[in-house]
Image (tube, rainbow, N blue to C red; front, side, top):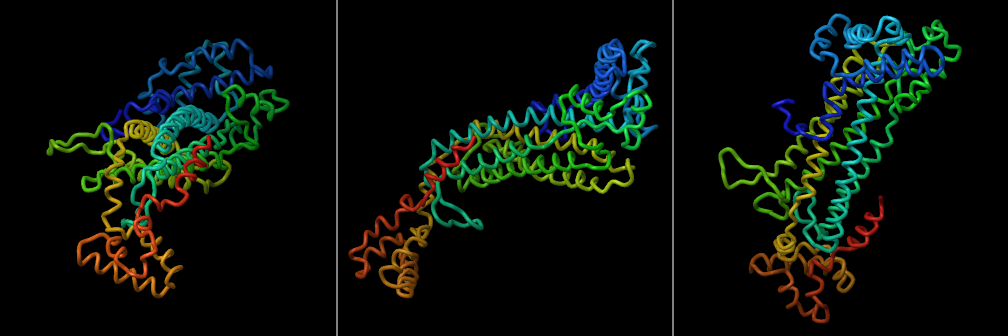
Length: 434
């Protein structure tokens, strides 16, 4: 719990990224190692049962472990001592047998990530489902398209929502595609200690360990080969950015002077009682700005020296957990945002006329060039636009009085709802993706 990070509070991922969850992942990594050794006859079955029974986070003091971790630089060292003491004397020697601290910590981080990613992808599926419903409902709801902050040509809200959904599905697929492996290499990544303890095939032990924890079996020990962490960092940063795009659009379109969208349950203001602030979008936007920096720290750990580095993997622990927590909060907020989003189609349609018909100038230029020639069409449109602004009338009214256009259906040409291109079919195609 943190007063300064409301975006992560009470998110479903809070339970998978808490201090207790990290401690349990460390314990699961230790117990899984003993079970893997027992499965290959390298430890008694009773030892595997004893270590697994003792490996319960509630039996250990997180704060005390954190304090004692300073002595050796990581929490595995004091945890191994406490876990060994919690197991009976006969089976205590099988705790952490042959492993190094980084084996356990890296594996625990992958367990933490796997459990959190499972929650994230399920929630993202829900967000995508809600966006699919919005896109289908508003397939033909016409609104101004905006480029460089200005009205461009008409588009539809359905196409915008379909675009948001596409990003959400891209994020889900990237998270699902990250390979999260167990880590087992011993002191310098050679598995030598396991041979010393009787393993005739240490590679089989790695595979057994991965199976016990439902993680991928690595091709090599990855103490200094940080692909899994970097891939996860990239997927998390993309997810935050994808949700940030959605939030940025909602923040823009829910401005008082635009009012095309609104959050279903806006937040209050301490000073201005009339306000209903777009709080969900704001928290998502904050997350989208935070996670790239966290990912940068994780990428910066890639150049790790020797067979096990000093500082590089240490920098990852809190950073990766924070990235998982922040993205988890953003996904939760996106689910609430999309589920309650208010779409004001009447305001969208009303804004199509703000430029007096100029929003379809692209169409007018194309159509009239075919009739009058490019130069004459450009001159006519420029003159008509000046007169429309001067007289305060729509561009279509001026063009309808032009003798050269007496056989042209000017009303149809200036109707923005008839100039949305393939927006509808694009929505239909996007919604076929699962």
